[in-house]
Amino acid sequence: EPEVTQTPSHQVTQMGQEVILRCVPISNHLYFYWYRQILGQKVEFLVSFYNNEISEKSEIFDDQFSVERPDGSNFTLKIRSTKLEDSAMYFCASEGSSGNTIYFGEGSWLTVV
Amino acid sequence: AQRVTQPEKLLSVFKGAPVELKCNYSYSGSPELFWYVQYSRQRLQLLLRHISRESIKGFTADLNKGETSFHLKKPFAQEEDSAMYYCALLKNSGGYQKVTFGTGTKLQVIP
Image (cartoon, rainbow over all chains, first blue to last red; front, side, top):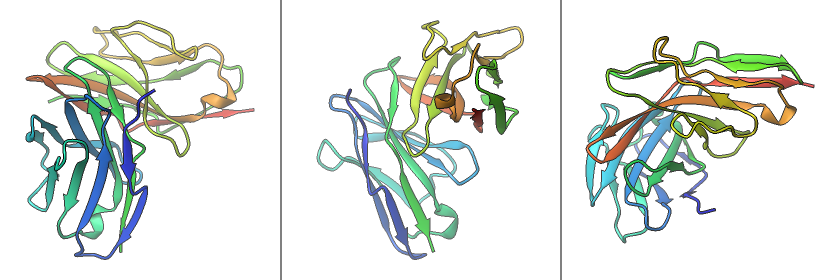
């Protein structure tokens, strides 16, 4: 079965550093998402991406966050200047077309120290 | 605004006992609801969706619009059912979909 893959699985970074989380969505999928889960809290929507632009973003997704799909395959989430509260599991997800199932990656665990 | 509520953080049952994981939702439109499962150190996986009305791994869930609930049930729990279970509501927003998750319930099946 096709899978969404994410790298790194775990990253530790110093506060203020830039972090890039990478995702390879399922081939031929059109819609891409990032979700976040802070330890002990629920999974929260961050952003959706379609046709090379952001479709919707939550209030969590402020100016320090950005997404791009630089080469038509990878879908990246960049955090420009990490804060302690950015420590969380970040899930990438992709979907083929509207009404289809959303597939999640295994997550990238980010620890900001 | 859409909201999904899972009132139990932890549910412990003995092997062979019935399981019911509660989920309530609030949504002004016509809801599309799912259950996702996350086994230890694995990815979120779709367990079932209400529109397909199928039974996966012995689990079923019925959408009750009157009670705005979508409880997940299984008649006889197995040890391998131990996992985190997330109820989720899907909103179709002009072509793409936005998922709102509940806080999750950890199911612990005691051998």
